[in-house]
Length: 346
Image 1 (tube, rainbow, N blue to C red):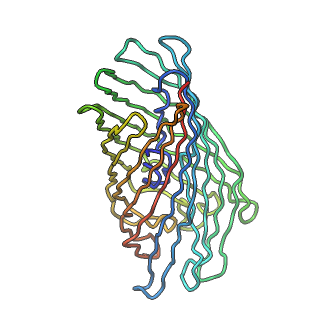
Image 2: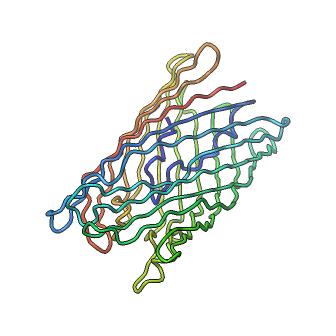
Image 3: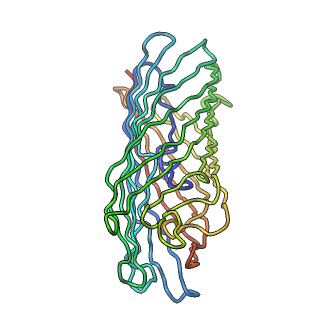
């Protein structure tokens, strides 16, 4: 179910950058897929112009493999798509009709874990991030500017520690992920239009604990430093009154809390709620959202051969927002996310 938990979080967060696979028993492999279908609409000019839904559906995949080197050392490889954006104002008659943008990223993280004893462990490793995208600005119909950004990449790292008690299925893990700077060549006006970006540093606190027989409480708190992050087109920043293509007014804190229940040896289910406070102030015209509240339900079924199939669905109530520059109002919006994960311990 957690494959959909961070699918519509602050900034352009998508995966939540969890390293949970490192805590699985023995050798472990998982493949996950999530699909998010937003309905994000706004109006301009006192309601005289409607944007239509400016946030197309998108999918996200993940892969993880974990193995034990010995009794104390384990290693995990995690591939995900941690950040992304997909914007398309395609409804005729809106002031920004024709404006569109995409951001696509892939991350490869290698995490090594060392267990001091049954309770305390530390983990760390490098993270490689690659990104690409495009941007088209149209005002009143005609295209004013467009650039396609080729792939750029860089590395960062993750580090953290965990406390566990197996007798009550308890684990508390704290993970720090460093910021990563990117530079992407662009095809903007006059041979300019390159892109620079900073993806934020973050801290994840993930926890779980048994509270009764076959019942587990779980949750997470994610802080992401979006205030110091940005996506900047070098051509646009050079114009009079130029500003980053996208920046954010403040950092975000995202909360998740849920309860899971084992109903039989083969089936367990869970329900959780998520919350991210609205930051207030104007948001980018490439966003249209500010904070959210969500509810998720899901379940896991274990086949006779030990393969686990996990599925979940999440309903997200998107926070209202007013956009910068033109003052468009986005309200009463939502998104639906579904996720599927196949996992196997061997």
